[in-house]
Length: 496
Image 1 (cartoon, one colour):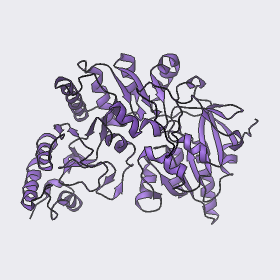
Image 2: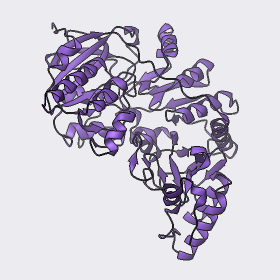
Image 3: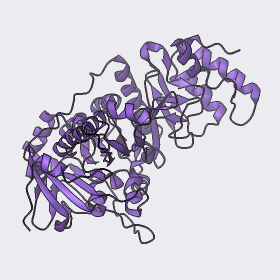
């Protein structure tokens, strides 16, 4: 079938006010950008002429400045889901301009296929090649494109010549059958391949091919500093001890680690942890450090949804693609995060918290309980089904004026029932088998910054006077947050 080639501007002109757009990709990688950049310019012109123009955006996760930033800047977004990393979009979400749906990533596909979120008009896909039969070779990020392409009325393909067609064969595209006909998802080890190396779509739905050439330019992570280095070491020391006490008697289980500076430090620490045998990764995103672990033989296989790699590391993977195809697989996040698979494989999950309370509840998403940061992403998908669920964070923020260990979190993303271990640069709190009262003592002593421990103990004494299985003072549980809003320093709290 012969497809119509268009410029980004011509393709953007097909999109109408009120349409819902879905996208390939997971993180910046695999996410289209030239059509949305052109669409932002068109939206600005429409607004200048006094005409309304807004669209809804269903993405894989974080996108980039040419999608979220560009459209948020010109006030062209009505709805957004399921995960965001754009400062401009975050501002629009928090001021109520954009209707944001924060979702567990593993549920997005089923929500969309069931029609809970309404009609999807467009799927825009970044690809390295497409055949006349509608066989698409994706680039370095998958996300939820298997579902989006299935349900969308029309498809636009950004054919990106900056990336190499040799990546074909690294993907494993598989969409679970919806209930009540869903069968076992037959992944029994991270390296199992159960789907297709290509995304197959109805070629009649492809209305435009947009030739383009761009690199992702993934920004480097902040250098590992003393705090993140100690945090990473504490994680590795905990895992090493799990071997010593027999909790991992049959060998290391697959590891999941989130994306970001802190997770990067954990992966770096694993490079030197020779008392931990080689392991596999069953995770959402593979960073540069993950490639280093594969090169060293420390990681024997990585199942992921995205190659979130700097340009130099991506080029390295492409130059040695035959080797890396034997060690990396790219999946939709309905598989990479799926509870059935995470539970079956016994994944050890490591995710980042914004704040943790004395009972083990985790806030991953909201600043001061109201301001959305990015979203829950896949952290709870993994934590709720993990063999061992670990949450990590520095004990303090904003030069010590904020304690990440608080009497009670202002928003709960992963409850105490899902959180097994809390780790900061101060130490490790193993919460398994502990009551709420015991958890509080362990978290204060092992994870809180020393400058906040007296205040946390003072709060706990007040809470214990209230009694109950979970001791809590309703009068004082948010005093840390209220004091920060008042004076800018949680140290100044006075319990009266």
